[in-house]
Image (cartoon, rainbow, N blue to C red; front, side):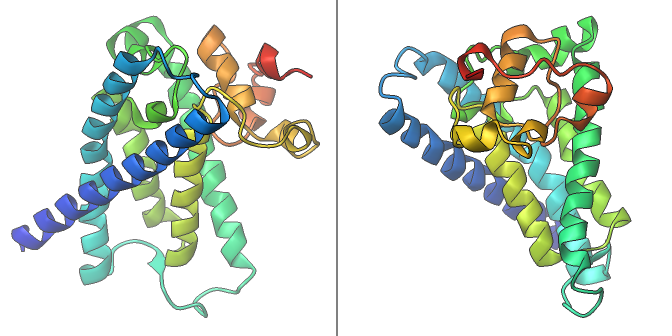
Amino acid sequence: MMMPILLSALAMTVIVALRYLLTSGGFAWLTTRVRPGYYAKLGSQMHSEIAWSLASTAIYGVPAGIIAWGWQNLGWTQVYSNWNTYPLWYLPVSILLYLLAHDTWFYWTHRWMHAPRPFKIAHAVHHASRPPTAWAAMSFHPIEALTGAVVIPALVFLIPIHVAMLGIVLTIMTIMGVTNHMGWELFPRWLVHSRVGNWLITASHHQLHHERYSCNYGLYFRIWDRICKTDRGLADAYQQ
């Protein structure tokens, strides 16, 4: 039994690594086209971001691979594959539940990471990216990677979700993790400054966190930042 579990953990680690390389690499390439020269002087920083990120892929991949094996072979988790298991209206609701739960966990662990000791030990690795690039999405110290890696594996035991909807959640998590760190705004200004955009986190919002550190801690939504009065709006370059 041990060998299939190990193979599943290894396979998932490879998948997470490839997902990171393809997504971050794709948006880094896009940056060279949209913002020529923007990353020109950040070569050593990007090498460091890639190294830390590839180390993080194992921390994310191993538990995910073990749980994936348990789901397929022993029926672990609340993940289901039959479209009729729950009403169709629940499909988008489950996505929102996962994103809200993940956002809540991220906000509070992220704020904790900014306390002096955990920042010095772990979170400083992520903030060494000045400015962040598309390669910084998973550039974490192992301690910080662990706090992020437990979220989705824990949620699949608690909240029912169709396997396809789980794929959408992971896709949103990956794309927003990368686009929030590109150093420039991918999304159109009309969306960023709209009523909906005022509650979403994009590079315009997260860039300010990397500039000031003590604000804008959220991942997907600005809800907790608004509630806790840590929302400082958008970075200066995106105010208009």
